[in-house]
Length: 421
Image (cartoon, rainbow, N blue to C red):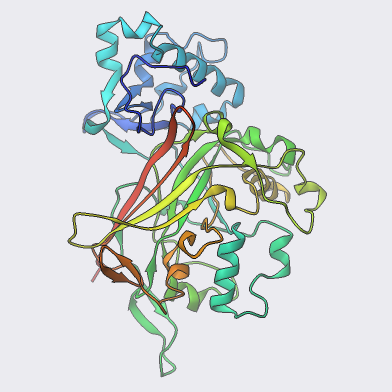
């Protein structure tokens, strides 16, 4: 695989070599219709042009219109055999030794569009969105902050992947401004709750699964088949208003403290591309119940990073570095557990991992943990931050570094704008 080389020039530090080929949806011009593409170096390959030219000629995709759609939902629903066929076709077409696209000037000019000139859109229509709580380090830190040292991690957490159902309507693409939410918070002094703009606005460094084929209502997905239902992963920021969340979450869990905005990166990196970076998942103690026991328990070595660019400043500063391999519950366990009661997942559904925190203080994945709920400050380019201020931009990124190439997710960014009057 490492010997693969594209005729498209790819900088050694690019997130998008021929080994990656992540899928997204874009508009080449403001007036264009949305269409699927894959990223290669500094370009996006327009899959609608490749399909219209008849170059998806394998048995599964030859007569399919999945790349003529305005989103990727139809393609992700086709399943792993079709994904593998598409990947093989695209790697061949883009390879340095294949003349079909390389030497067809007219098609090449139509199909390879500079990334800098396109508008990137949500890659799928997200019908449903669930956010899990699967990092032991994040869970423990939150428990210590809110409940104290007696029971920072509740017994049920070690038995099942905890989650809540989020709001898919406010899932937005990287680069979208986030309006500071207004809401209620704990009363301070009197008996009347605070009401106004959130004073504890936070980011969460997460990843998320994009569901491929779904399952029928009433028919759970077997844990050892769950990987076939995962198309790929994106970077995700589940913005959180910690003051609103703390006041509302008992007894039913997060609501307005979360539902005002969730940002995802535009490029879905497939499990096929991530396979060389697979790693052994952490040991689970106590052993999970049989329906969550996997023949192969797998995670991925994906380096994650969060930067904040303070309001009015040109430069951003790193505030945390973590890794997906720190998660206690695997992506496949999350998906299988989601369906064990018969709940039906659908193509394009989004399953967030929850904040990905590591064991070290500098690998905590949100400001709640980094500042211990505002007791301390983090330094960003010489400025102190306890929580996010208006004008601050948060930039998340993730990548896998191999011996011969890097594959990455690009960035997942958003800027805080003042609360609505």
